Amino acid sequence: MATPIAPTPTLKGNDADEFVKKMFESPSKKKIAYMKKVRERFKDGNPLIDIL
Image (cartoon, rainbow, N blue to C red; front, side, top):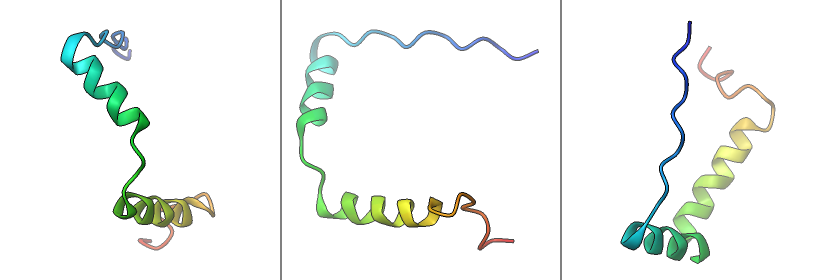
């Protein structure tokens, strides 16, 4: 039987502040290019098709 998933811990203090800052930052050009590659790879629904 599978192990139950533990609840996500609550962020407090500096960790919470950093998380909020990152949420509102604009993504870098490098991140945008990476996400475009990921989206293209998953477009057909099977990202492993090139490997097989």
